[in-house]
Length: 79
Image (cartoon, rainbow, N blue to C red; front, side, top):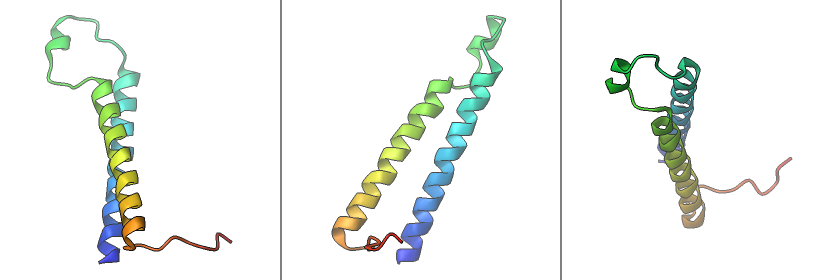
């Protein structure tokens, strides 16, 4: 069961990185030159960044809940 929780966290972190990469691609594209392109179905860069922030908060909350419930154990000796 702990394996699936860790796998969920890793997948969540990979999705966070993917959203960050999508936001970077939107940022590099720059503003559109024509008015016709503004009506396209492409979401703005803030959409991806906002999703990344929400998923990061979800990952932190999941880790805190798992630590407090004893589902996962913290490393008592960091070396």
